[in-house]
Image (cartoon, rainbow, N blue to C red; front, side, top):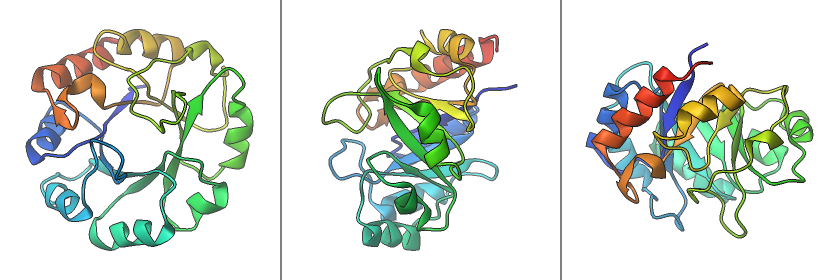
Amino acid sequence: MRTRVKICGITRVEDALEAVKQGADAIGFVFYPNSPRNISPERATEIISKIPAFVSVVGLFVDADPVFVEHVLSIAHLDLLQFHGDESPAGCRQYSRPYIKAIRVKSDTNLVQYAVDFSDAKALLLDAFAEGVPGGTGLVFDWSLIPQSLALPIILAGGLNADNVGLAIQKVHPYAVDVSGGVEASKGIKDVAKIAAFMRGVSNATV
């Protein structure tokens, strides 16, 4: 099965279009003020208006006030919500939108239980754990901590780049991979050559 790709932390139209041109299946926008990749819903909407059909638009939130999430949803057309904090299952479900739940993986993380708790999620996004940081650390976690089978599809994140994504796919067999810093020239600014190299790494991987 082909491994899907989400390129996250988009802040510019040209980066979104380049990601699509190179074959990305989803584009991610970060609605988290503490992130260097934070974007306003108005600016995201400008970019979304340029994205062609059959590319999913994902909005990332971190323990956001429901009023803020609803505000973003009233402005930006998002196909999928990504919750990257300590949101409860009920907190993720309250918007009646498809969602994915990000889990920061460490040695004692019970991913089987997370898959049960968030059973209506479209996938679990697995990222590296770093104290006090909700994501975007650029760190790789121990992929052997992922069970051989989970009740939900896996989106693998955490320190992925062109050099390691092929191995990651061979080891984990994820439904999709998620990259941000691994294809950047600087935080929030994507690099055309890095995007192309990452997509080649995905395509060349043997699943």
